[in-house]
Length: 350
Ligand code: PHE
Image (cartoon, rainbow, N blue to C red):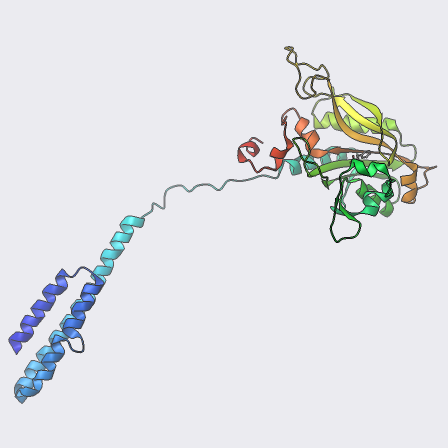
């Protein structure tokens, strides 16, 4: 019996040594130490031995069983170490390698330009006024002398808001001027900058674009003041003190007279061509750029907000932010849609 135990032990240890996986070890565990395993068989057969042998053989069997249990546990942990080594080989990493730096973005080009415009007009004493993107028909049209049947409403292809009675995505920022005048005493000197919306989409029109609009109302405000403000602002924006402006008569229902403001082209300086004779692409050789709509605030509009048009006068102007931004000589892009395209190779240039 003793020699059987010894030989079982050496058999088990040899098999254990050769085992290559957890499941092989588990099979050996069952084979030798399991409920109907080899050692239990020995235990069962002890009953046929003499009392003396029962004691010695039983003890040997128990000690050997304990040794095998320890050897099995050791084998499990050896196999675990081998598995860790494999993982370490496969998944190692060098924590000292410098990391990939996350790209640092910047504000949208148009947001930055809006900041610049606020600084330019801020220097001339203009405060910034804000209003809602979704506007009432009352502020977007009626108060601006554009009643329901007025043909001028057709000039602005409007997005009406479904299920919201008489609400529109504002077609211009002029409604902000009305809200501001209603809420403030004279004198008034504000600009409003923000999103505007029209059913229009091509290389130079986007259904969402930004406007920059200015308003100054006081006693004795004249077109001369408008011209001074426009000229100074454009010289600062294009960073060129030689920029000149000119005014042409035009029509907007909320101003009288209505004007179009042009300025000399900041690339060819009004020549229509570059010094080497190459035709100027920006102004299409005309030497002038159309910049803004403007005019003297219509007396009816002043009356609408409770100002006395016999005592006060004012000017207003408005332009497309993207349009003017695209004309800056250091920007000079032909298609405004790229500004909203998330095209990194373009954005990274600025
Ligand atoms: N609100 C006009 C537009 O969107 C621009 C404008 C503003 C014209 C102020 C004159 C005076 O077209």
